Image (cartoon, rainbow, N blue to C red; front, side, top):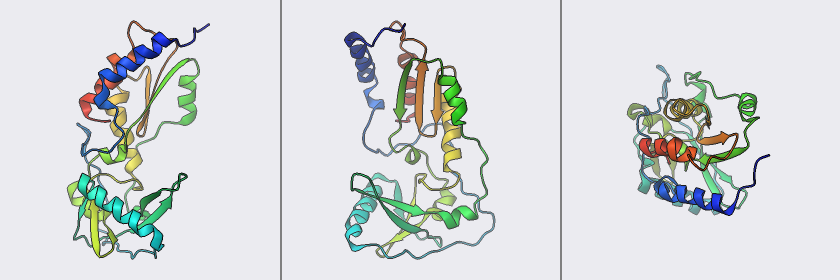
Length: 232
């Protein structure tokens, strides 16, 4: 029978986090994963698609403007002269805050699909069946840590209050974004640590049958890799 996690074990794990504290951040920073190709939007010779925004409730306007200004400052977006334009869609979070999304459905309809597979949930559960110790890591705005292919940035354009903007980083909502980030995670994290690490999009689960204080997996494997490739 597995022994319960002790105070000493908790302290040991906290020391690991302190040792790699630069890998555990709570805010977005202007960084890009090392060794990952920028995201491409392949639309063939289709003409640009431009859509007008739906009317946005006036009490959402300040929050949208604030988020756009924040993303400009961080370099996530930039001002644009693009012939493309998708709609802004404000979404209310459970805590009452507002999240600005872009409706890329029209762009997605003309995008050639990347067929790179996501892991099957049932197969993940099979691999975890005999494990007893689990650690989970969730990247901070993981999609934004992958850059956009320069010629395709214009296709991510959106308009707000007399301004036109486009993404420098891969935004959520593009049909091939999950394939891009899964491919990156599999190549950079999954392969070196595949026996005890499962990456799923921008989440990582580390698992084992028992706790080994003599050689914590975090210290010898995925956290150093995360630091090396600049993915936090």
